[in-house]
Amino acid sequence: MSPTPAQPSDSGSSGAESAAEPAGESAGGPAITLEDQDAVADVERYCTRAKVMSDTGVRLQVVGSVLAAWVSVLQPRGLGDQVPVVLGLRTFRLVEGRHDGFDAVFALSSVLERLARMTSTGSTAFTPPPVAEQAAWAAVTPPRTGWTPAATVSDDELQQIARDGIRELADALPADPGASMVAQARAAVWGRLLGASSPDGEDGFLPAGAAFAAHGLGFLTREGTTSVHTSGPWVRLTGPAGFVLCRRPMQL
Image (cartoon, rainbow, N blue to C red; front, side, top):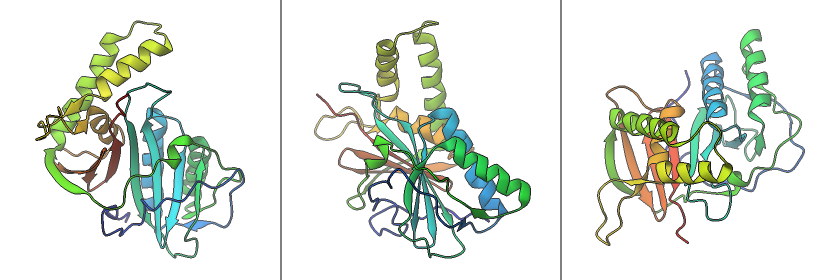
């Protein structure tokens, strides 16, 4: 069975936040063997959901005998865009750790094509695509240490925040909006800070975009709970199915 994700916290048990720079233009290499067919199906579901939300690639990183799969759900589209950086992370056990240090970004369509072939043939050996991609978001690395517990939130509440935001965006945008209007609407909805005000007077600590990512990537369960940690401008949602790491918008 696919494991519960390793905790990307101060202990560094998954090592996922110790991200090196993405690999260059050429990647590929020997097959990375997942634990079983359940894990193959799990990776395929995760990548399918990510592609629907933001088709900006998947970063595959091997740390010991763990495969960390990073995706970007939201990212600023230019200077002044107040949309938060929102990353999704899932980890999967590998049969062995001889690929430790592998780190590259691939097109989601290429990865999904290989996963579908693995499912049809009953294989658990993933052969990386021969060509890697460059993705600016892959160079954004959340902190490994300094995480402080901030809250425990019900998954039902996060689901509602995400659904309300999706509906608000649909109502706010005309049939053929310009890029500037879309950016402003996305920032207004997904950059909105939720949660209790901090002692220094800040309005909140949790961008609504984090709830959107957790909902869209399938990390929330009915009547479940998600823990929230903060570290500087970063917020992390942690649940049994995966992690959302979100950097609050930079104030100009």
